[in-house]
Length: 246
Ligand code: 9D3
Image 1 (cartoon, helix red, strand yellow):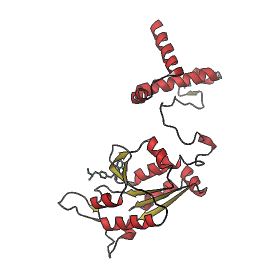
Image 2: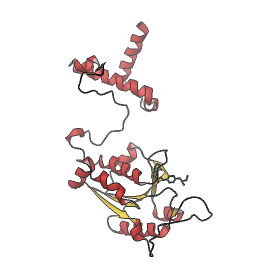
Image 3: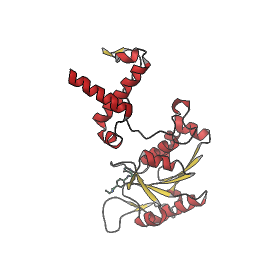
Image 4: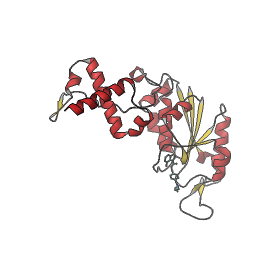
């Protein structure tokens, strides 16, 4: 069981995602628990102000420190000790390895920033680690928090049904071979012969080769990091020889 505490100004952004398929099942089964906190609820005053203009000038509004800090303190107190993770484009980029590590924790506290940023003093004194999901600009941390939630939940034993109990998704070292389903001919385009043949060994080798080709073509970085060896290397060699002959 992992507990996710999400701190956001937009808790409604999570509703439909949490009410769908895998995440819904995981919550119903008690495998994950998700709690949403609106840090506007921790803002003082009649206007419950959560942001303000930046000192020194500039565009946009900066999230004020007090409501955010009060929310983090309250959430932290209520449950086991856990690091506080700020979702920010300045964070360390998430990858599958980090996802697996996060999934070992009993609890994740995810703080969603907004476009103009968070007062630096909160980052310094209330945040333990900073996470980005990649090099592109989002409007805030909410979409990123959903990515973390989805990826981490998949690693929790029992969350994936029998459908994909390879479960704890392994690090994707190769891209997948193309997939087809019926009909055997679609708008004049046939499914590769070998897949209809029923020759399981030939199908396995075809997939392995297509997977290698596709990885070579689209993600040469993966082949460099995890070079072809054993059967993969043999297959590539055999193909290279074939090409020479023809
Ligand atoms: C250029 C200075 N900032 C804009 C005034 C940068 C900026 C801050 C915050 C840009 C976007 C955001 C909002 N994004 C996130 O909070 C965020 C994010 C992202 O934008 N990309 C990848 N991962 C993440 S995690 C949180």
